[in-house]
Image (cartoon, rainbow, N blue to C red):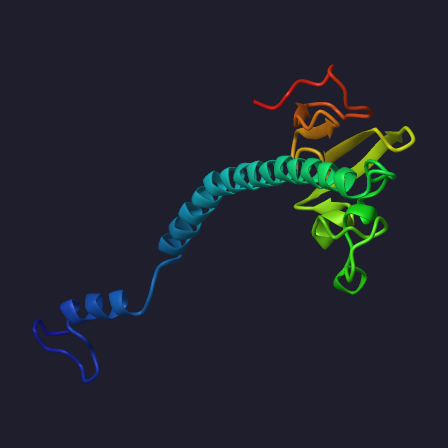
Length: 178
């Protein structure tokens, strides 16, 4: 082949390099981008999970406060009954709230009255007396170390208490929440 003479359809070296660069990304470039995305995801996901657990725990503590307020209101509205024995008695759907009664007082929302809210399970236990003079409101994570790591409770003193282990009875042995 003669120097400087090209066959028909043959590109000169500068055009050949330009054509290779415009065809797309190389496999190595794509692998580098995928690796960077995976590293960013590995950093972001645990942080996201921790923030979701913190939000669930905050919601659970607020739900225990709501239950305390509802119990005090219920006790004032229905003194012959005392404190409500179930979450259902504190709640009630729209159809059962006209007028409110001791069976459906409509003091808490339907989600909390069902016993599950923000990946926490809630119960009212240890209701005793005539009229009911004591109660325990307990909030537990639905899936420990996924939806939350702390357990919350309160009783008739209306102080929200927290524990890292499951709570079966809420009393002065469970530390108050800071």
